[in-house]
Image 1 (tube, rainbow, N blue to C red):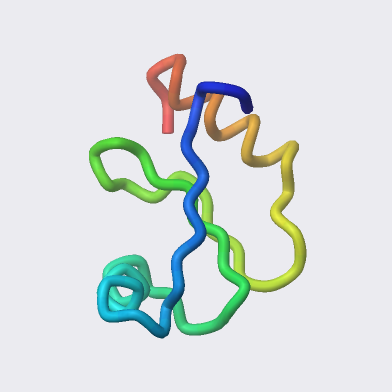
Image 2 (cartoon, rainbow, N blue to C red; image 1 turned 30 degrees about the vertical axis):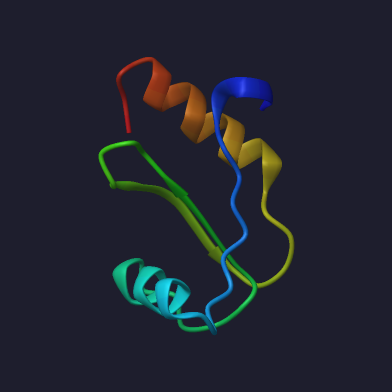
Length: 67
């Protein structure tokens, strides 16, 4: 996705990681959550590998003003 998004790995064993896990409802790992700048969740997946096609579709829809 180039410069269109930032990717962050979060250690849910750390204090800040536990806070984020609670905030976004993460109860298992691995978990992938795509969050808009306003905090709204665009994509969520638990387990497996993230679906790059679906993520690209969601990001594209967000940039066009959709969700």
